[in-house]
Structure formats: structure tokens, C-alpha cells
Image 1 (cartoon, rainbow, N blue to C red):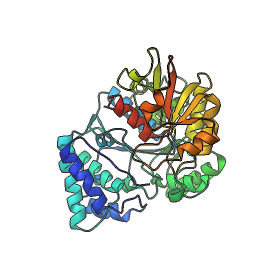
Image 2: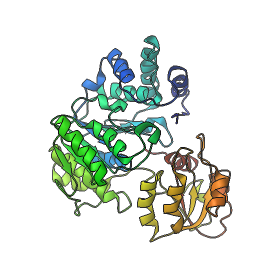
Image 3: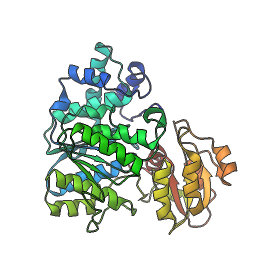
Image 4: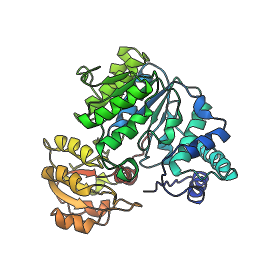
Length: 411
């Protein structure tokens, strides 16, 4: 499914509009285009601070947030590259701790796209974005660089980094089958492709068939392998700043990566993980235009659970506090298994489309799962006449729409 972005800044939007003209219009895995593009840009990926590289199906963004928070708790700075963005494209590129400004982003994208056009490379949206991030990072000093894999690992554009100081694999699940194969074994093989010779590979415990593929990949390339339950344990002393019992595992993954690299002292790990923030992960919205549509005393929480594994983790939280669910699911996702996990903990189900993205049929889902369909988020909230606790879920893009309407931009 093609990625996209919009910006309120005319200069940034002018460059974003060029993506559709230059790129194949969708993600096509492979390293040939990104390698060629980076070569014409002076190979900026070879001039980065020490890199932490994180793959996984669920939890890799949270793991990156914990890494950054711990590094910053040690009075150091980190570049961070993550995806997707929720509201503004700028969220993908954090330079020495701060989101890139529009005034810097527009010429940066223009530089990358000019080179791509001049050499007839035709990079995908993600490849051009990755090149822009690495170019920005190479030009500004920082103590560390945190890079989240976009899709898979082995053939992901971020996998041009030759020697990170630590690699991590968060929870795996079956997702993006069109790119990564139909089975968990295929998924694991692709994600384990970030392993590098001599670089610690820290992995959350996975299903046996996935661990087998990861172990084989580590042996083949000569990567020291540390698996949860073998080389390390979930750290019960950590107090994650992100909500959800599953976040302790992500925090422990980040902590083990930092320890394996001997990068920050233990006090910074403890303090940073407690202070970590990351939007759209069981995030309660502040008072704003969207929250104001509900009766006084109501709450709106947003979460990006967009596949069955993430929905199962979220269901564990909802079992103690059921909520009214407003759900938007992309057309290429496993809607039935997502809903099988979430629906038992729903006080009501309202289905909406994910704005600007091909979405699952809301009318069909409403019929099958005994809910209702609504045109958009404000319409979905309109029927509530008494205080209610609402969860907006099913896609990170929908979570971003909730933040946009509520005028609560991630920073």
C-alpha cells in the first residue's frame, strides 16, 4: 500500500508532491535503488553516529522511544528515524533530539529528489525518506542514531548501515504478507536480516519457528545473539513511562541493547525509560476539539494496534477496563482476527474508514460484528449523550487523524 504525506508548509508540500512523479508509487523491497541514491549523495549512511537498529512487527517504535529517552537521560543527543508519521511528515526525522523544522525539511527533500531525478533512480517514498534522514543526520553532530526498520529488515532501505553498535528485534507477528511471505518463519528470516557480523543481536522471545530462523541467521553471519529468557531477562526494576503491561518487554529490549553496547550508565536507563513518551500507544488525549465533542467527564484514548498480535496485547489491557471502540482498519489488514481479539472487551463498536487510505468495508464489518458504521470520527462520537470512555484504534493513521482533529501534534 502506497505511503503518502501532506504538509501545511507550502515548501514541504511542493517536495512531497514530487514523490508521486519520481517513485514507483509503492514500496518495492530491495537495496539497489537506495544504494545508488545514497552513493550520489556522498554515502551519508557511512558518516553517522553509533547506530541502534530496531526491527519487529510490534513494539519497535516504542523500543526506539525507550532508547532515545535513556540516551537523553544521560545528557546525550540522538538522531531518530521512525515511521510512519501520525500527523506531520517531520515526525519521521528527529535531529539531535528535535523534530526537523519545515525550513530545513523542504530543501533536504528537494536535494534528495533532485539527485533521484537527475540519475533516473525512481526511489520509493520510504527510500527517498530514508536517504533524506541519513543526509540530515550526517550533517549534524549527535551522540547516537536510532533507526527503525520500515518493512521487514533484510531488504529494507535502512539495512544499508554496515555496522550498527546493537541490533534489536521486537515482537514478531504475521503482517505485510505481500512483501515478507505468508508464514512467521518467512517474517523472522526477513527481520533477522538486520544482523551484522560481530554486532550484538538482542531479541524478544518469539514462537519456536521464528526463533529457529533468527538463530540460524545469527550463526550464518556471526552475530552474538541474546534472546529473552536465555541471554537476558525481562527487567522488573524498570518502570516504563508508556502505558500497557507489554511495554515492560519493549523497555527491557531497549535496556538490553544499551547494556550490550555499554552505551549509558544504569541510572540513565532507569530514569529515561520511566520518562519515555511515544504517541498513539494507549495515549489519552488532552482536552481539545475532538475531546470536546463528548460529554464532560469522557475520555478518548488512541492506540495504533493494527494487526492481530497488537490487538491481542491491547485486549489484555481492555479486559480490565472495557471501552467504546471506534475502529478504522486498512483494507490490507486482517480485520476479522483484530476484531476477534478486541470485540469481547468493547462496550460498543463503531466502524469508520481510515482517512486517505483504502479501508476495510465499514458496513460489512458493522453487520458481521454487530456494530454501527459512521462517516468519520466526529460523527462516530455524536451519539454519546452521557460520559463515556472511548478508544480509537485499528490504524496508526487513524490515531494520527484523532491527534490532528484534537490539535495535539506529536513533538
